[in-house]
Length: 127
Image (cartoon, rainbow, N blue to C red; front, side, top):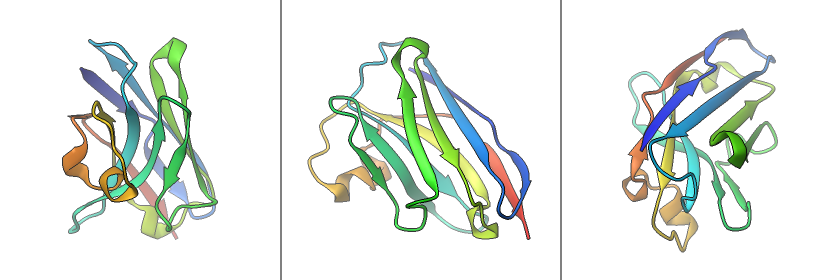
């Protein structure tokens, strides 16, 4: 599985960006698709995820109401629409694929349960 993330950049606070993650090399029919981020000097944290079977979505509290995750099976792509961006959203954003069933939210947010990772795309939000 190869994941190619794109769409990062520099934006002012209050602005919007849409990240994309294109998957190749294996069927797109994985269990879950997600986004994590890593701010400078910090560990990687969960941002959002979508379940393939029923399109259920999960969000970190810090982005609820501002970010939206979606997917396009025909294009083998998952998106992260980010609105009302804040300087604290500045980070490298990584897309990921989970191939095994994740039964609880605690597993969804734990990066150790995700199997494949993209290379990351940098988002910088200026104040």
